[in-house]
Structure formats: C-alpha cells, structure tokens
Image 1: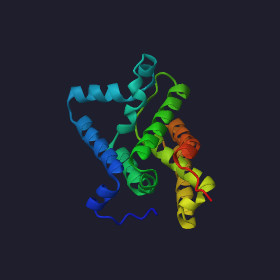
Image 2: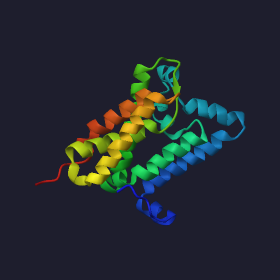
Image 3: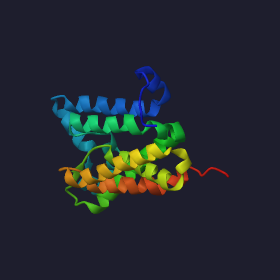
Image 4: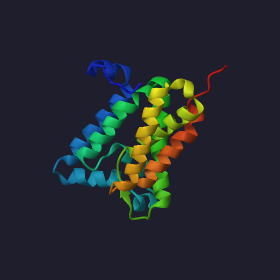
Length: 197
C-alpha cells in the first residue's frame, strides 16, 4: 500500500494533486530562498504569524501550508506526501482529497492561532500531513476493510513514532501536529463512507 515503484511519469498521472502540491511547495521554496528583500517580505506576509491574523490577515490560516523554513523541512514533508498520501488520493479522488488536505491544514493553523501566543510564527505542511495520518487512524479503527493488516501496523507505527518525535524535536509546531491528527480523524466519516453490507 505504501510501496512506491511507479516511474515519475506514472506517479504524476496517477496522483496529480500530490504532484501539484509538491511542485508548488518546491517553487515557493526556491523563490523565497533567493536573496532579494521582496521575497523575504512576501514570505513574512504569508507565514503563520498569529499577530497578523489578529489584525485581520486571515489568509495566514492557509498560506503557511505551502511554505517551509528550510530545504530539509521541505524535503521531509514532501517525502511524507509522496510515500503516504497516494492511497488516500486514490480513495478520495481529486476534489475530495484536495478539500480534505487543506481543510485539516487550515484547522491545524486555527488551533495554532487559538492556543499559541500572538507573537508565534510558523510555516509548514505538517498540520495537513498529520490530517492525513488522522484519516489513517480513522480507517484503521472504523473502516478496516480499506487497508490490509500489514499496512495498518506499518502506518500506526509510523504515526506513533511521528508523535514521539513531535515532542522531542525542537521548533516543532506541536499544536498543529496534534490538531491536524484530530481533525483528520474527526472528518473521516464525512469523507470516507462506510461500505454497505
């Protein structure tokens, strides 16, 4: 289920939404890495700055999902998408997958805004990725026929390790990880219907 053996072209054809998200993230990272003040300004305007949200800059609840603080940050999140998101894009299909991904990302950022102090600043797709993990937890508990036993054990182990690392890694938006996970689980019934027996 999580083994990726497609060619690049096949992956793009089968998982266009994941491809577009990864491509857009990469382009933004390249642009904002250029040594020009205008790009630094735009990065600041799009980051998840709670003080800015207080001032009515509501786009900051979405735009941080596309931004990353470093290449390693971008690489880690993109690899997580490439490895773990394809089965969900296949299950949910394009529009529903896109809606789910960005809804959980926004909800994770809303939780960050509510819980963290006004000076808190964050970027990254982790909230949305943990939303996908939350959906996997929902599948494992409520829709087990969508996933074989080996895949279930693997993904739950990875999620467990991810949660441990959430609390051990510095500069991690713990609130976004936990809120994304919870949002993904709670939204599961709305996006993934039960089989009719």
